Length: 200
Image (cartoon, rainbow, N blue to C red; front, side, top):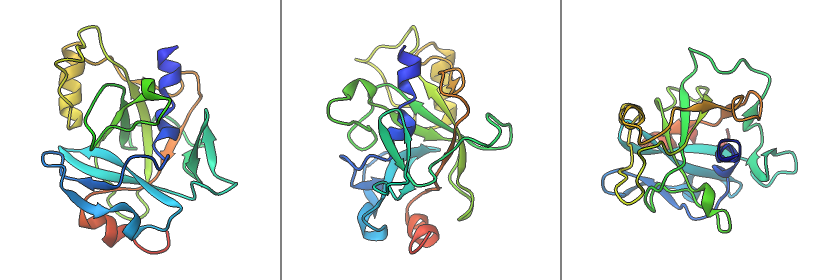
């Protein structure tokens, strides 16, 4: 049940709740103000990429045609269900269902059981590089909330998996939701503005 319900990360990413900025993973210093660059109907969610806090962009979150998953709206064209999944060529996107910190933690009031943070293989390499294979990572048998340290990269996440702190990632298919490809660009710092400002 935990694995199946954990998939809500895909939709939860788009909810414009407590996040205002993306910044350095070490300092929390904002690199880009979310709503200065993007129209009011676009949001950014924090994503760790190789130790740096970056952002994944979602558009049209209040549009009547926005995609939905579970009980969250994820924006227009935010989920692709007609593509092969998982693949060996597309980069991966992980939702880690453990405590993190205020800069990274995605929490929605009333649904705190699904608090999580994100890690991606890499950021987008150009404007059209915006498809990700999502995976869910739950706490492992050796997880201890009191001592847990946020994994800031895929390699750190894999070390925690090897140590039993985190469980092995599961696909959206394994979670009972069928194939899902996540659609939204990931960028870091000034590249957010350089690549994704204006109409998208």
